[in-house]
Image (cartoon, rainbow, N blue to C red; front, side):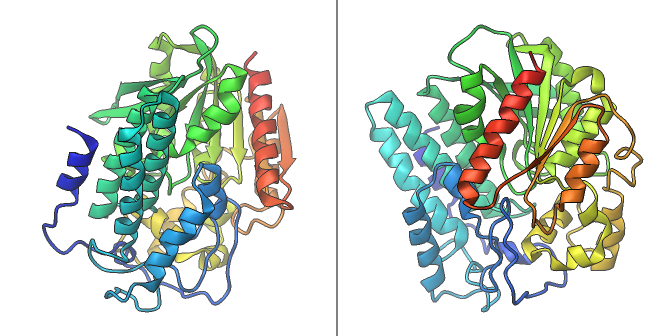
Length: 415
């Protein structure tokens, strides 16, 4: 089915769709101050979602286009589920978050369909995938419109790969708990298989396709393949709920990669972003024989899970994402705090123990949800650990330098 027809079918009006910010029934706290973090963006009192310009720009979206779409959402006079929050317009119509970003994605999709040059077609499809993914952000369970945008993001991503110089393999893995899981294996255009491979463990509010820039800009030039998976309860992994065994999907995929002809199973490393670092570090402890190294960026592995004051300061959207992933959308704050305590890798008896797996952890000095001691704990727990402080001035350049250093470190460990 053509993507254009698919978008018409998916977004055909059927009933009154739930508005994203109402899906998790927690007591929300309207913070009066912004809580800016490099990987999570800005928390403004007039937006439910964190506005994450750094990551959106890094993924390849144009700042002017971003501001134009945000402006269309902001000026809408349509009914909102919360009049105080600009991005809570009810229904698939002008001003609704999913509608505006999807509508913008469709303009790029049309350009891609009309492009005669493969390079341009790939670029346009990738841009459409980025905007469709942003339409579904933050990818809460039960967000019908958001989930439909995710389908379109994956379709556009696959179309982009068809026109790219790099190969994209869509792999299917058998999961012990039942069902199959789809992941994307990105292969460099130069070199010969099997390739050393980095398995990406993403943050909880992203799709696996959101990490394409990491491959194209950093790993592929080093001759390294990239394997991506959606985190539990998102995208292709939506049938599985996140639990205390946060790495259960990634461990099963890691075992099956040994049978993949394009992957050198003796040279596989993990790279975890935010909560994804929880997954990556856990695998480093539980399956050291399968992992050459583990890298983390702004890890969330301990402090946020055990510190109620830190949770109180976290943006509502981020805490809603956590509640949604672990299937506690209707739980009280108190019940959620008790459950989150079990996700600390230190409380699980892992972090703090010595491991032979090389582990690098990078941090921003003033990150409220991943303090420097979090990364120090990870580095100190490894017999071959490394701590990396990321510069905040300028923020974007510091981020790119950190990614370059991390990927070079991973390449060295996989030689």
